[in-house]
Length: 321
Length: 95
Image 1 (cartoon, rainbow over the protein chains, first blue to last red):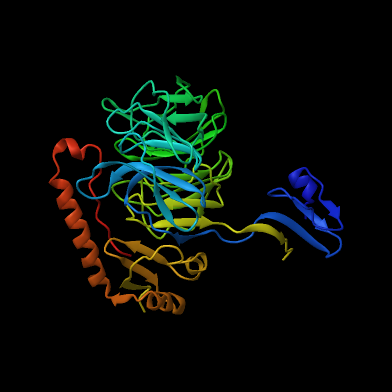
Image 2 (cartoon, rainbow over the protein chains, first blue to last red):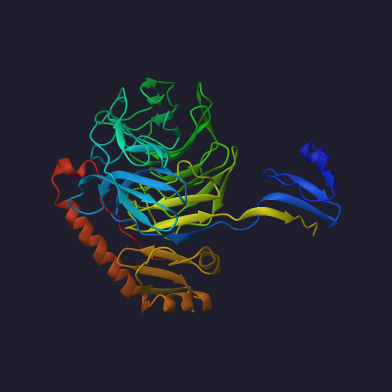
């Protein structure tokens, strides 16, 4: 039998009580209960239904599972009209709020419900708009107008627009960074793709999957200065949704022509399968400032249906058998 | 015994299906309010509790096909410049 300190390079703390604020993955021995304890995910993650959105459409999003906002997009059925409609979620129901300043489909978004950013869209749109939870104001324009670029990485004042589709020539490896007032061209992706699932920050971003003429499972990480290709995602799809960070991310759904229910998690190195959504969807809303254990999937080809992913976490005993 | 139960039910939003439901039985939703449910006691109880109407697999597939065919026809009728920003709905085969 190996010792834990040999495997993990750490000694297990011998404590008379559970620590008050254990970190995810922390292990200790509770001498009062004579139990080996661990903090982290303690149950199986699964998707449950959430409140229905008002308007079924493709969309972009910002926020968390319980404080989310979706903006713009395109109706799922004829006339497929681009939208400026904005809806907010409080964890149980959606409410329509002030429209965004431009109507567009295939746009990108990131941030929180009270500090969101929306940018680009069909057709080679370069517009950016900022939302404060009530009102919209204009932001600096993208250097290259495009659509289906990756949002989800960063916040309103420090965001990335990753890859995307330019009409024409098509998929691009361009990446731009926003500083709260203007966009600057940054290091390019290794692979030109559109519809990548984005998460993280401007110094630790993740771009999963994507597509050109076919669906891709390629994944790249950004460290603030360059992009690196890392372990491929277990499934190929563009326009998946995402939640979390570079080292604890969730990707779900995608593939506009054959909408997926697949859900996978990433720990910074490896991908793992998670419970699938009930409804296939792509180009829907995610939860850019959510986590890998509490995520939201909204509309995006699944009608008005919303789903909430929850992986129960807390402290549990470790069994030796 | 079939692996699945097929039926129609209207998604009422929050708590239409719960985290525990998803752990208790297979569930997938499709166009036309079609739901494919794992064929066990909890799955059957869930569908009944949602006022679901049970269908055979072929009946359920026909409802899905009709929805997809209508959506594809509507998309095909769009002018080319309006097609470029959207994707033609794909076929769905129920499990």
